[in-house]
Image (cartoon, rainbow, N blue to C red; front, side):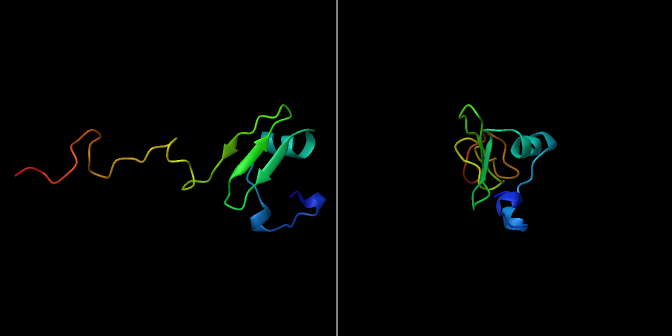
Length: 83
């Protein structure tokens, strides 16, 4: 919640924005920025498009698949090494 609308000046009410997005949030009409308790940021444009961003660790695993374990080549067989 913006400070001028009664929002608190505390870490749980802060959102890190670049200069362009801060200006949209502050001065442009029709833009809405919603910071959810888990750190997800929802930005709704005047035309109704709503992209979301999530902090590292909360990103959707279907969109960003896990990296292979350290030392294992992608596509290498899984299991103990042959003797």
